[in-house]
Length: 245
Image 1 (tube, one colour):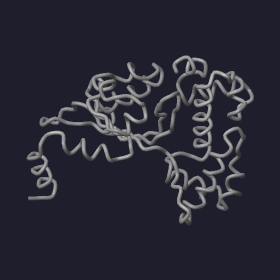
Image 2 (cartoon, rainbow, N blue to C red):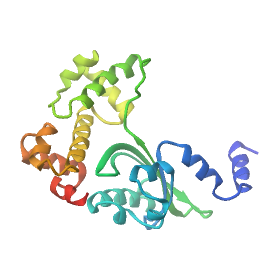
Image 3 (cartoon, rainbow, N blue to C red):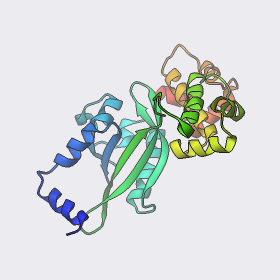
Image 4 (cartoon, rainbow, N blue to C red):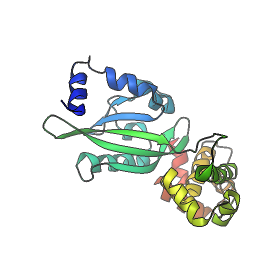
């Protein structure tokens, strides 16, 4: 009996629900299972904590009922690519909604779930917060990348250039690019933009700031450019995003 068969036999003898529920609730990453209609069948404690809702408020509902229409359409479009078998799985950087009015960039993996006849009956998603490790013992490439990340996080209102990051991190541009791709699955420029837009989303949740002020505080003094970049990343303009909160 091979290892896969042995584990499958073990699971079949378990009381239903134990494995995914016990394991899922101790994992800090967001985990969810959806059916082919996009309705949530299972979410772990990390997902409930991020949205600050109860299981009764999410199970049986889809993204359109839980999030703003524009963000929901992005989530559901990727879901359908997996459910329809267009792609075998998806790994993408996406904005995940937290409450109240906060978004965070996550690396999200989506995989199809099959029945005994190999028909796709749903999907599972695992979403990990994109952040670097806060460890004093970091060394080598990750230690250098961490210096750049710290600088980006500390200066959301500053226009940051790649040469600044290479000087701060003490590595070449090519090494910086490779490091961000390896650890965050994106370029340094993309990470800078993601951090600034995430910062802008938090500011938009506070009505004391005008949209123009939010743009300036996120290093986009030109309102037109701010709106264009925000919509490119969020699939919704800043005004509509604020109204959706």
